[in-house]
Every structure is written in structure tokens, then in C-alpha cells.
Length: 626
View 1 (cartoon, helix red, strand yellow):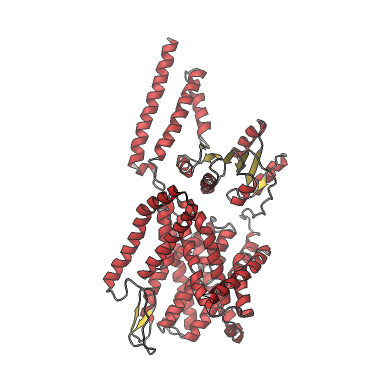
View 2: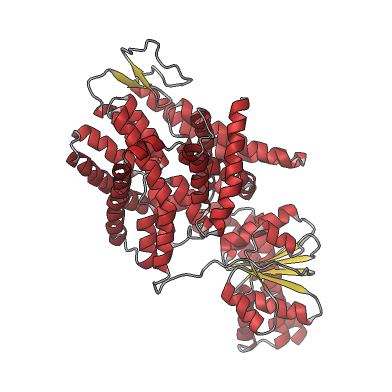
């Protein structure tokens, strides 16, 4: 245990030094972690046998990352991705496997060995690609979404690939245990492998039932069990219990999936999707994000530290050549698949270059193939080095992508360094587009100080050109809000164009600064419901007030006096605010209103109430006129 802790300390110390340097040089944190691992492993030899043990621990970061990804996806959104999952992802796996297997046959391997190699190398690095896309703000681009679809398909494909590999084995009696290890009928080393498994020794139909049961349990527990537990913990007012429960959910689901022989990462992703509609979604994200970052960092360091430098020094040309061959082959397939699905320009190159490496699941599949005697230990060791080297090259491929994207017309905004905020105000306005500008002008002209925040450099520069001081930075970042004086402010105006960011900011501010009054801009009624549940005090739909005023002009020009039209406008406004609160109780996230019977019924009742109120008002005006 002491040795394990000392090794972990060395890893973390190396990361603290190497990662900031890599980030300052614009290379990204992933390359910094990998470089730190190389320095403390192959270069200085500071780590020992605990590297493998620590890598298993750090792989939990990949599991946690997929859980957080699932939280960002509603089931309806996942169903909407089915064409990309089957099309983009399926074609990439089939095309890359075929091309790499053909290359392996060209090197003299049998078709069984070649197919196993092609399958192992066809999978890209979920950990590196998603981390890099997130850091560089590319996750929501067309290329980023396409890359995510392929990575998700690859993660799901690991299960059938594991089932296929035993069919490629040589003449050995083998069977797959519940945790993915191999049991041999005649093992020259004597004792067999024992593992904690619910499906070991069961017939095929029983394994299938256990697997379906585990998945059903995860879905039902996510829908019906987690909300009462979270509400119970919320009532206790113990902040640390949120973190404990979040970790328990991820660890428990991963353990359950392992017991039935499924991928822990896939189980965590499924649980995240189930909880995506939960009101505690943002709480889970904020609690788990630091753990995910730390464990992913450790995972990248262990990849760098585990490189067999002796083999590399003995055959540097072969290893580098094979790594480049893998990248070229996968890049070729990705290029044509992306073209077939309409990706263009910088999105096309992001998709092609970002996924061209081999990934961490390749380590698992090659180790599995070696246990089955599909590949020899010597070949497996060389291929593991090729995978690690291709992962090391990945940050350089993203740098190449950035160089190419700067030359293209569809280049998006470049990330700028956030400003250092040196002012605090009574009112903080997050977002200074057309909506935020008007709020600022009214409040500032009335004699109250505002602090303006926006992540759009052009908007900030425009405000400064007119002499209005504003600050560049992402308003959803806690440290930026703190620097702007959120703890002392009376009002926070959320006027962000991005609906998800706006909801996230409202949820964070409402949770951590309950004394701040939150005024939020909503895109539409559904977004208003989301903001209402997130904790906004006042919600303004961006088109509502202008439409209401236009309606008042119509009434004035078809026979009503200005006073009567204004009264009708005020009645409608008051009723609509009441309606939003009422319908929020019937609103189901991710479900269209047209498919929600309770919502439709209550909406009809409220509409009749509005007609009654307006007719009563008209009768009252008629009596006064008479």
C-alpha cells in the first residue's frame, strides 16, 4: 500500500509540472499527461510494478467520463442519433477493421490473427478525444458531434467484439468468464482463474437473462429510486453526501456490470442517460467533474509510463512505421465516411484527424486475444506499443487540425484568454447580446452599477467601442462569477444565447448563492420550464413581451380604447405567468407537449380560464361605457 501511494505521488508530482507547461505551449493537457508518464517511466525509471495496478484504478476515469456524457444526453436525443451511430460509427468500424486486417494479412499473418488485429486497432481513444474536444471547445461542432457518435458506437461494439474473439482462437478449449478473463480446460500452470461473477458457469440463456436483468435494474433504479434518495439527502443539508451518493451510483453500476460480464463504461453511460432528465443532473455533474479529471489524468500518465522503451529502441523504425500506418489507414476510412455523411471543411478534418489513433480498448482486446492464443505475446507487446504511440501522436494531430482550420473560411471563433475582473456590481449580466444590452442600458441609466460578462470576443469589443466596460470570459465558470462579486450582488441576469449554458448557470447560482435574485431569458416555453425547475426567480421569454405588445396594438386598431387594450394585455400577462407555473408541474423533460396527456388537459383548462377572464373584462368595460 505504501509503495502504491508513493507511485501515485510520483505520478501526481510529474503531472503538476508537465501539464501546465504543455498547456502554456498550446499542446493541451493530454500531451502533458502522456509526457509526464514517459518522463517518470521509460526516461527516469521512477515507477515500478504498481503501474498496472494504478492503471486499472485510473481507468475508472473513463467510466466516470461516460457517465457524465450520458447525463448530457436525453434518451430522445440518443434515439435521434441512431442514424449516426449505425451509419458513421458502423461504417468506421467495418471499414477500419477491413483495411487494417488486409494490411496484417499482407505482413504474413493468418486471417484469424489479422481480423483480431483489425478489430483491436479499429477502436479510437474515447478518453483522449473527448477530453481534447472538451478542452478546445469543439464538442458542439459538427465534427465534434460526429466524433462522439463514432466513439459511442465503438464503446458499444466492444461487447460483440469480445464475444467474437473466442471464435478466432486456435484449437484450445476456452471459455469466457464473467469478468472477461479466460478459463482453460487444461491449463499448464495448474489452478484456474477465480473471479467474482454472477454468470460464470451458467448456460447461455441464463447469462442473457442476467444481462437483461442488470440493464433493466439500472434503468428502473435511475427512474424510480435515485430521485427519492436525492430528496432525502437534500433534506439533510449535508453537501458532502451529494458527492458520496454520486460516487456510489457510478461505482455500484460499474461493479454490477462487471458481475454480469458487461463493460462498466457502457453501464455508466446507460445510467447517465437515464438520469439526464433528473432535476439533480447538474448536481451530479458538478460533484463528479473533479474526480473525472484527476482519474483521466492518471490514466494518461500510466499509458505513457507503461511504454516498453526497450522494444522501441530495438525496433524504432518498425514501431513508428506501424503507428503511422494505423493512423493513415484509419484516417483514410474516416475521410471517406465523413464525406459520405456530408461533413465539410474544418468539421471534416476534425472528424478525420481526431479519430485516427488506436485507443485504450485496444489494450483490453489485445490482452484478451493473447489469452486466447489468437496473437502471440511478442506480437501483442509490439501492437500495444503501436497503440500507445498512436495515442501519443493524437495531440499533434489536433495541432495539425488547428493549423488547417485557420486556413479555412468556416473557421469559428478562437478561444481567448479570459479577462481579469477587477470590478464588482449590484447587478451581474451574463450575456451581452441584444437582450443583455437593453437590460444594461435601463439598469445603468437608472444609477445602478452592472458587471457585464460574455465569452464572445466580438460582443465584448463592440461594447468597449461604445465606452461600456465589459469582461471576456465564460459566465458559467464559478471562479469568474466569484470574481464578478456574485456573493455580494443582488441580481444575476442570465441572457446567454446557449440554452443549456443558461440553465446550467441558473442551477449553479441558485444552488450556491440563494440570496441572489435570478432573472433569466428563456428561448421558448420549454426552456422556461427548465429554468423554472433550475431555480430562476423571474423568467422572460425573448419573444413574449414584444408579441404581447404587438397584440395590444392590434386590439387598439380593431375597436378597443388604449385603456381597454392595456387592461387586456395586463390580464393576459398575469394569466400567462400563472399558466407557466401550473404547466411546469405537468411538464416532462424530453417529452413533446403534444404527447403529454396531463399537460394537454391542464393547458385546455387554463385556456378556458383565460377566455372567461377576458370576456368578463370586456363585459365590465361594456357596462361602464353604457
